[in-house]
View 1: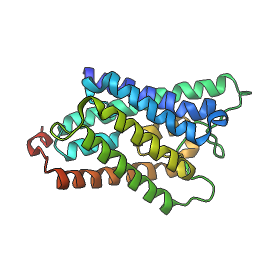
View 2: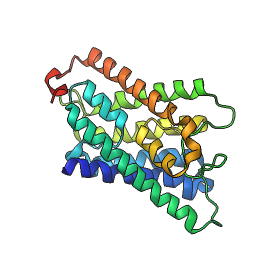
View 3: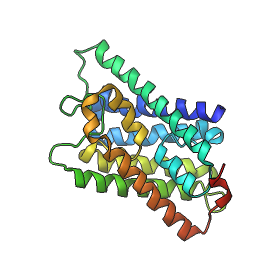
Length: 232
């Protein structure tokens, strides 16, 4: 139960602080600052709850862990539910902030969406966003799998690589669709800003496909796979 609570709290703060950087400070820090904030928040969370739950805070990461045999199916389901609940709570706080002070110069706005939701940005199309989400999640999850591998990973330094990877993909991906690479991160804001639902499927299919490719590639290049862990 402790690991599920850790995932819930961790995902809540990822959405509250990382998405909050766009909602509350977007006009001041811009896309580069927002991307760095995503990376820094995850970096802090890795060193806070990494030894408790592994600090997935992302269904795509948990999916890759399932596929590579690092977690059981029942545990995977518990992680995803916890992450979605945490994301909903974090986005709920942002929704509260937005409605508390409507005169504030909020950022993170695309059309009617004002919670840093993952929606197509001007000029981007569905195919572009889908490919970006798949490839960027592939990169991010591959870094997570490699950095945290029990035999080939980098131990206490893993969090640095993971945080930098998330920051990098956000800096590059924000101009396309506000960058997801995390279905929970997309779910929370969309729950409170329904205008984002039409594009939500991209933020699920793309990241999960990217995680699948990352898992296959990591198994191929590392040779590490615990088949017994996939079954309950």
